[in-house]
Length: 134
Image 1 (tube, rainbow, N blue to C red):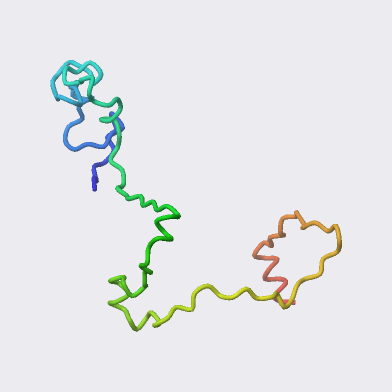
Image 2: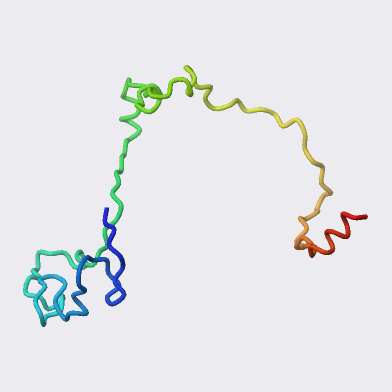
């Protein structure tokens, strides 16, 4: 990726001398014209494309419900190269999602009671020491 520092003059990331400080065009490097007035600007170029900062690359995958149901392939965790490197860490069969269990306990609340909205009291270190000494 790009690791150029942000220029304090133009607030852009670039290497070498700043075109704005030198009074030259960012696009062609010639003295005089601004980038918007540069002769290299053509109607085919998209506006703002040169102003964009380099971003992270990524991928997007999409699958329709029909494609998902029509496939017979079932992916396995053991198809992943990193899993093959560390077989002792991964069990042969992953247990999957745990079953839904009934809650065995709950805390009874007074009907209509609301949570206390008072901030906790913070003790000064001297008070805390005094309390511990008691």
